[in-house]
Length: 166
Ligand SMILES: [Zn+2]
Image (tube, rainbow, N blue to C red; front, top):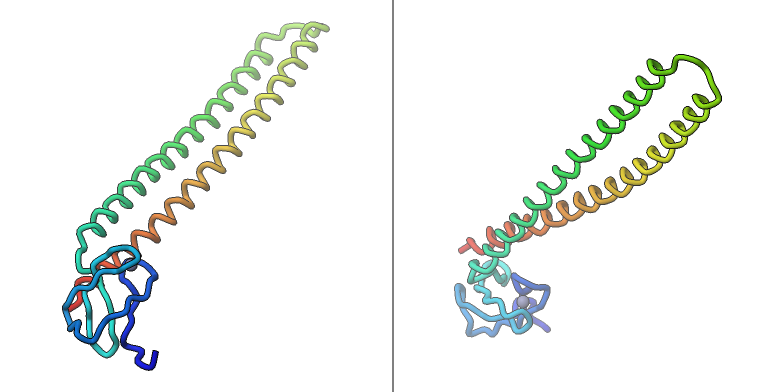
């Protein structure tokens, strides 16, 4: 290992590839680990860039499609959350309206009915709270996955730019 310019990192995976001296600038060498074809750049330092960018372009397209699907899903989850909150308010308003305008006289029956409504509202709030929580967790998971895909996309774009070097 007296010459630092005899190995270079594969453009597709972390493997170090030994590049024999008889391989010149622009020659292609295959990675023994991942099988990617690397083009050799003999500049100030020995570097490898992808020789065949078609698989990387396909992978990038795939990443973009997956990210767009997840973004749609996230958008949909946000929309349904809004509808759920709206429904709860409408339901509460309806119950209050019924209680306010249909109660003519105080009676034991009315008080019991009021307690039943309060209990039902409490249960409903608990259920909504649970649904909000799981929905929020799902949205967070989607956001994380989208961020991860964005990172992979930018790495793929970087590799494609590198592959364009002469
Ligand atoms: Zn490799």
